Image (cartoon, rainbow over the protein chains, first blue to last red):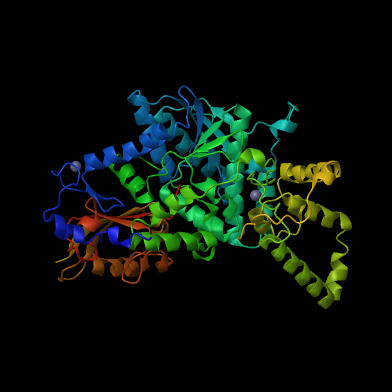
Length: 454
Length: 98
Ligand SMILES: [Zn+2]
Ligand SMILES: [Zn+2]
């Protein structure tokens, strides 16, 4: 946003170009104004969009030739465009890797009949088959109980996903028990911001889970520049600032064994919609739980509104945010072996005593004490909820990154969380005690190194 | 002389219009219509819920794309564009992502 002067106000374009020509070919009538305020004709715009996609993949070299990658398809406009790019690339023989598509059915959260659910999944199946890619189906509730590969010799573990081979057999991987568990968990999260964040984390977990189960090391997603800039600002607001540097990279390595690849991160939503319209790319409108929430109330929706508003008058808003995040460095993942047991981002809570995080914790403790003494009766009641529960809650908290701590903060019963997350937090606590004993003599007291200011 | 036009809502914007994507309408009266006067007409006559998700001030809410006869409305004069009979005006919400 420091480059206000560079931006021509869109309206001036009319007067400047007089009788309106495409800036590229200087011949045809323009139909799309892109973020740099260049007005493109249909043909030149399509060339521009495809170029953005291909050069992102080509330049970054994140996908190795002949690799088999997993592509996440929600049915929405961005991932629909992504599939179309991939199909076109394949047709022209320019796609140097193979693609399997995965769709996460999230309809468990919405009150739809089984029949409606089937029909929506059927729509997804038809589009993916039209594009000529094999499809794996999975569901969001799968993330309520995921067997981790390192723990998983147990062969009777349920599969996370299944292939759709013929159009007829599309019964979604719906699991009523896990679906209910998920709904119960979401209901007990106090704010819409927390619910939104939780769904996002689960979705990511399902993608990683399917990738690991099927042996993929790359998951390709349809994050647009617009979505990413909202993501970055939302993450900052939600205490996930330490993860922002991963959010926009074309090859996100934070998970170690599986890389998340974002080949359309240089296109914004407007460009995606224009592409879909000009290419007749269908997308599916699937009912989503977020539609029922009063949108303007959550951090994510407020942020989206803010960014769209800025983008309207300053078209370089979105690319500027993304570029700024690109410049942020992040710690070497290998030096940070510990991962948050919910979102798998590197744990950002192992910071010095003089950090902002510790200050927040002290404040919280003081507030708790104060509250406890004021409402003795409540305290007496809650002592019923046993020591065991409190230890479980503390162990859980210790195994989460700062952002996830905030997300599950209002959750009264941590055993509602996905089974594998609970397990991880327990085993972490056990091994942590042993480890501390082993390395205690090497630990320095009160590190005064650079403590991050969050 | 009423002005017949087609309106289309997509990308989630249709949710505000009883989930109906295409609307063939006639703008009443003999006055000239432009996009600026069309928007409140849509709000008062077609919109089913939550006007704040469609309009902001006298224009569309940021994040909603407008196409006039398949061209970016920024090329057509935006609010000042004078509506012609049989125009097709499309509103695409980009707020739902995907
Ligand atoms: Zn051109
Ligand atoms: Zn986390």
